[in-house]
Length: 418
Image (cartoon, rainbow, N blue to C red; front, side, top):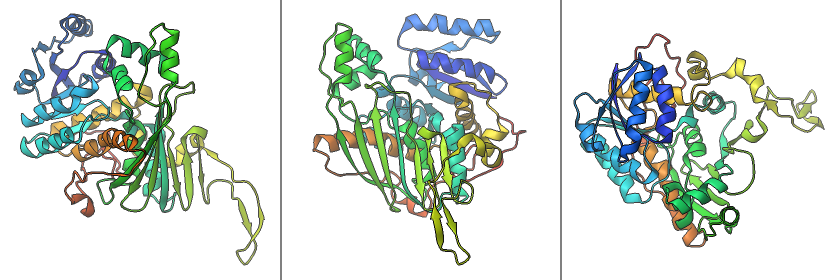
């Protein structure tokens, strides 16, 4: 059983705690800490209701990470602190699993990479969208060649949060403050993580360069005016970025959290044989979807009909990814995505192997925030991605041997002991 510490006892940690209690035969929470004393008592009281021993309360993350009864640490604090805490945990030789968000500087990402090499610990971003049902099926179809050669992908984070962000900017909460002071793709990884895995980023491919542009800012300002707290925001309502990859693919990213619309991660995969488009909940795959070209006996097209999307749900029986099929998460945590991403991290920490989302993935994905900010400030000029792997991406990088890995298709054993 893995012994776990938790740093940060806010809303996200409280939600994860529900999932962790479902995993009490796999993991035991031995220590917790938070800088706000008022949140600690109600948090640990939840253990009493579950009939579980209360965790030790620590004064800070360094004290927690140094405890012998802590083997791995979940970091669910605010955006600016994730990387520094993960660095300190790894320098103690422990495994750090941290919540999503963009970076504030490239140097802090280099510090994260150096800590993973120096301290003996490793880290994993808990990007649960990599374990979404449709994302996993798209990954499987890509590995089996059903999309053909992949040419272009799209992704993003489009979520109407204007009212909440305007309020958070006024009260000083970090997410709202970022939108007030910065202009960048502040939250890139929900869409980019699954696409990066499909494109084998850091494992034979990598991000080369990016250009970014931002629209004018109106949505957040209007929301602030409605609440009687007028403020000028730097964050454009729509931030659009295009990444060029070493193997020739392009990725178009969108960030929009201040205009009215339904939620979307805007995922798209376009290849020479097929396309996945999240927002229509469909795929078009040659030989499976309705055939737009009816050839004659010599193979020449005789008529043309409009291509038709195949609903994604009609492909589950045939193409369900084994991670989702064999570990049916029953909708626990974000529609079932929290359970597999936590199990992936816990398995890596327990066996001390490379996590499926490793330090190089974390650095590459999170650097999008910094680089988009630079490109926007320079009027959309191209900016280069650092090679955090120091060239190892060319030789396929470091592929995880975890049963929860996202690099190849594996059939995990239901009997695996966590």
